[in-house]
Length: 162
Picture 1 (tube, rainbow, N blue to C red):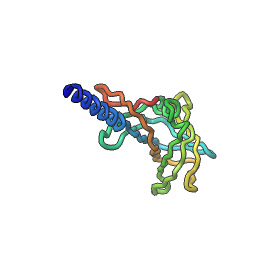
Picture 2 (picture 1 turned 90 degrees about the vertical axis):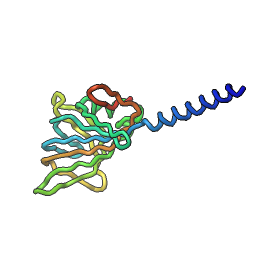
Picture 3 (picture 1 turned 120 degrees about the vertical axis):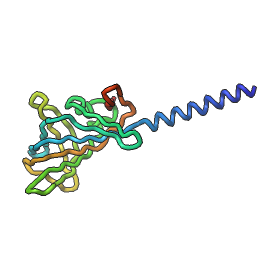
Picture 4 (picture 1 turned 180 degrees about the horizontal axis):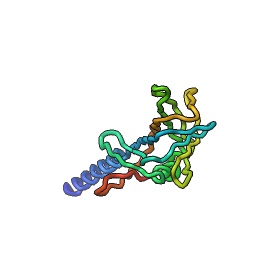
């Protein structure tokens, strides 16, 4: 009887530990897209794809990955809580007359254009910010997407959504 109670307690502790680890393993990924310039009209922001989008997680794991444009745009398509269902906030920064400028935006949608060479975002301005029609030295800092799955191999880790 003692062995039965011990085994039952051990199984209970293990299942509690495993479910806590599953909850703890969910990672919030943040993203940064950089470009030499952007173009804007009305509620559209256009950035060229000049390099991969950098994604990273916060502590404790501090995982990072480079996403190509298709992987990045999957954030708007895959999973129940994707960016289409829950559009991310973002901060756009650029250089204007030697000064760093910024604007908060909501990224309502994102699409590839010109054979995958540019991303066009449909945006809503936050906090009354507006952006010029054109600017140089651009960074777009995109709020997080949650995932509990990270695909890792000898080349590093990649977020997987959906």
